[in-house]
Amino acid sequence: MSEDFEPKIIAFCCQYCAYSAADMAGSMRLQYPSNVEIILIPCTGRFDVILALKAFEAGADGVYVAGCLEGNCHFLDGNIRAKKRVAYLQKQIEQVGLEPGRLAMYNLSASQGPRFAEIVNEFSATIIHLGPSPMKKKLAA
Ligand code: FES
Image 1 (spheres, rainbow, N blue to C red):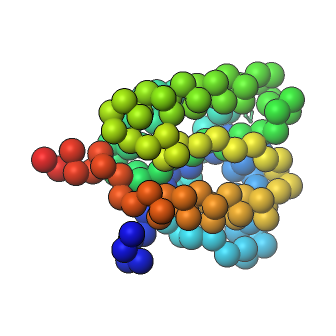
Image 2 (cartoon, rainbow, N blue to C red):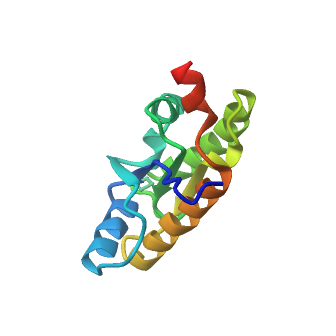
């Protein structure tokens, strides 16, 4: 893959944990790629197929959902439902020609700023390895 490829990543972050962790990573001035667009959602339980497809249609090369640790969702089981939804969607996107690895789910607590930065770095590396989203070409055609 070209070293010039800078993937566009969209992260749907739950307001209680992941978003706070992102905030902390910023406050701690931790290094992570700036190509991640963070979208605040009330809970990962709100993540659905429409949000995922809209993100890919908007040019995302990778999409991830980040929510509270299992057992700590403020809406009880939103993150468990999101986990199942992401697993289901990974199979669905494969059928339209997107690699399942372009969609992921992470769990972290509000105090895990360093983990947030690590996730962005890890996921970004995965997407760089996969290359640009094939959906971009399909939409441009
Ligand atoms: Fe954070 Fe539900 S409130 S995942």
